[in-house]
Length: 258
Image 1 (tube, one colour):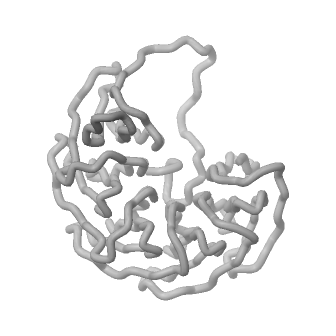
Image 2 (cartoon, rainbow, N blue to C red):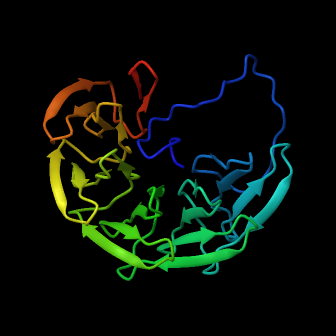
C-alpha cells in the first residue's frame, strides 16, 4: 500500500539498484501524478491523469514486471484524473480513488469489484490504508475520512474542518492518523470518534508516518516536520526551508527522511 505499510514507514524490504541503468520504460500516453504500487506477485499498478485536449479518460494500469501491459481499467464516470496511489490488499484487490468522488475496488484481473462514491461529493487524492480486518480508510476533499467495509459499504465517516489530501496511516493499536487542510493532524479511534488533534501552523498535505514506538511524523506547509507522541503532544519539530508536501520515511535505525 502507499508508503509500504499501515505505518507509512516507506521502508523497503528489498534492495535498490547499484547502477542507473534503465531496465525498461512503459508509456501510458498521459501524465502520472501518483506513486507506483507493487503487488505480491510483482505486478505494478499506476494511475494516470489527462490535461490534453481533447481530454480522454484517466486509467489504472497493471504492468508485468518485464514492463509489458497486463491490463488497463477505465473509470465508468468519464473523469480525467486518477491522482490517488493504488493500494493492494492481501487478497490482491486494488483500491484506488479518483476525481469522480469514488473509491474503486478492482479485482486482480482488472474488472471492477465495487465502487464507493461519497454521498457528499468531493474528489479523492488520498490513498487508501487497508487494516488487517479489511477495513479501508480513505480521505476525501469533502473534508471527511471514510472507513469502508471490504464489501464497499460505509462503516463510518469523520468530518474535519477542511479538505483532506493526506493519506491515512494506522498505528499498532488501530488508531487512524490523517492530516487536513485545517492545519491539524487527527488521531481517530477505530470506531470513528476523535482521540485527539494537534494543530500545526499551516495546511497538512503530507501523509503521516509512524515509527516502532508509536511516534507520528508529519510535514506541514509551515515548513516544519513534526514528531508527535501517541498521546497527541509535541515531541519535537524541525524547520526546513520550504513547505513540506512529501511524506516522511523511516529507516530501520529510526532516521526520518523527508
